[in-house]
Length: 94
Image (cartoon, rainbow, N blue to C red; front, side, top):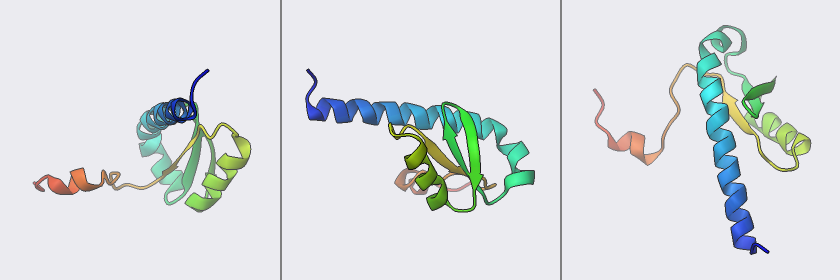
């Protein structure tokens, strides 16, 4: 039987895979979404956009209610690239 830490690690890996898959689909659809959903937040699951919301919080709360396994992600429809945290700031701008 897996330990609690193993179970949490599995959930973390599953969530990261879900987020990565959703982001790949989102990035592909983004040019079309900019004209119709700019500034909205997309609730995504299994590579599909489920619904758009006005705030990230609203999208997150809906995801929590709909998906008890917490395997979903939220993406903002914006033109700017995602901030990669410290790594993006460590590279020189060209």
